[in-house]
Image (cartoon, rainbow, N blue to C red):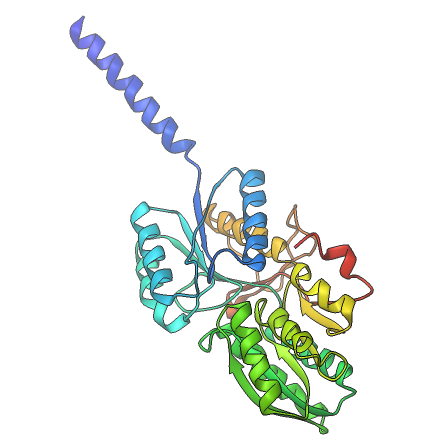
Length: 327
């Protein structure tokens, strides 16, 4: 009887173990460039919504500043925790590559989102890079009347996405021969630093007529500096940012328009794509996917291992009130 009882206990234990494995949720992590800014807050919101809809565990963690070393440390800790998938928006793609390679070697699904890098299974891209760059330059040109001097205030100098958009902006500049780029400056991921950089530019270039704020913190920063300097109406600003941070400047007229996409949808798509791969699925070249919970039909481009959320969106006085409280 004792042997029989022990056998029963062993069977029950085995069933419980198998059940816990069978019903264990995927652990999907997203590491943004930094936490605490509205853009990545919006991505976090989308990731949480996807996790609830898809019954997975979503881990959102990142550095409080755009700190490459800290971002690497966080990814390494996630590997130790045994997560199933890691998505990263790299501050420095080259620096973070070794730890992403390590994650991949451990059997973890490795993705990039918002910003690309190496050693990933998939890049969840907010929009095609050329479309973002071309649209941003077109909006600046329209606001400047297609002539005059302008500057670019970017964030991290090693950010792949920002540098790629700048390349396409400069390519598009050929369409506007009366416009001249006078400088590119960097303000990290910090609004106050962008204000300071822009105030310096206003003093250094008295004929400045326009500026692109290349990321979600530099775009409102340069607009605020223009207003602080009393240059609204003389210098126009555009760039890439979230409606909640840009609405004030659109309403004042300092910003005629700016460019983005829906970062909530991007966060949702990141988690959805991770689960899709973890379930053993493969993306098909050229296919558009119906993803419940977002407003677009993402398309997969096999040669780049890239899932594209959709085209960039222009925000201006006609639609800013509709979106300023959403993200």
